[in-house]
Image (cartoon, rainbow, N blue to C red):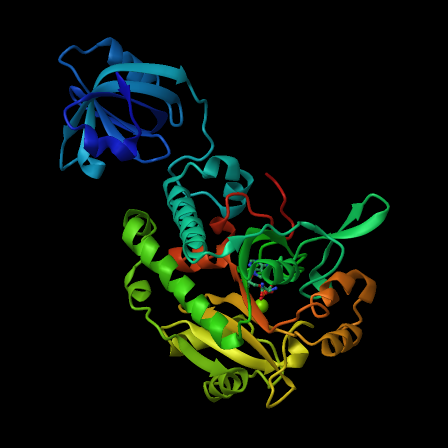
Length: 430
Ligand code: 4AD
Ligand code: MG
């Protein structure tokens, strides 16, 4: 008997196969029993048919509960009426374990309840669809950079210094020293870019975000490319390419999942290059004209991001921010040094910022000055200053937040469902 996964079923028409999985649902009508089995790759209807009322397979069927584990053997039959277009005519059914009172029943449950049962919630159809899209996006990101010969250089997680502002630093003890969980691999990618030319890292990052929003996680994944001899403009083109590559992949390979999520793909299909380009100043003026109360010098909040996406149905690249509201490492604009050559890419449909990046300071004196202005301890950044002492070149990069991207593409209400085990303010269980 050939053991197969449900996603391969169409290649086994007419064959006797074995499926190993869990009971998703069951129903009976007259002489037929339908057992819906999931195995992580899909869902299949398995059918038991008998004229005999107390057929041994019927007895086993009656015992089965939601999420019990089973091995089913039978013949693959094409049937348009079955979900997925195929069913298995059961010849044998083996119960591996009977689940008792599985807590997530088909009725509606509250979010706190589901979050407390995240370890089981992962088995639900929608959660499976989201995490399969996430996996596809991860593969697309890797293929994108590997395909362009970017070297994957892993950044450390335990670090001695801040990258993105000291207010969200996650402090921890490193023997007799203080250390921080990495907020971003960027500083290390700058070193790597000077060693390898074009590089990326892709891993978990941490921010002690004290605010409870639907787009902030405490632990999230970020992909961070960094390119030597690159400018702000160069890196924006890479960001555009990356987003279009991800969209094309998901739209071509994960249609079924988007359908399960009831995600209308048409807004995603409409996205083309070039993305909308606006300076920070232009953006503020546009938002003010649409009723926003924000002033020049403010950061964009959720209301501004929502407003922006009501105006544009394409991603918006915002550049030339006031240097004051951006990180210490941002290269100033030649024409107006009060402006930073940073870029934020805003996703459409109200999802807000998915990418933050820009061109980095390559001049030693200027960088030293900035560290002092930002009150950052110089000793911890000596190695970073070295990059400006030995063959310094203009360079640029960005970070794309994986969960923000998943939330947008799947059109989720909250980012917590975009990661298998979310870490949120007030939640580290399970
Ligand atoms: O804009 P950010 O803070 O930029 C950086 O960290 C740069 N050092 C990256 C670089 O240039 N290499 O963060 C980048 C992206 C954001 O646009 C957002 O998508 C995501 O990371 N992000 C978060 N996602 C979920 N939860 C949070 N708390 C996030 N903070 C940032
Ligand atoms: Mg940002």
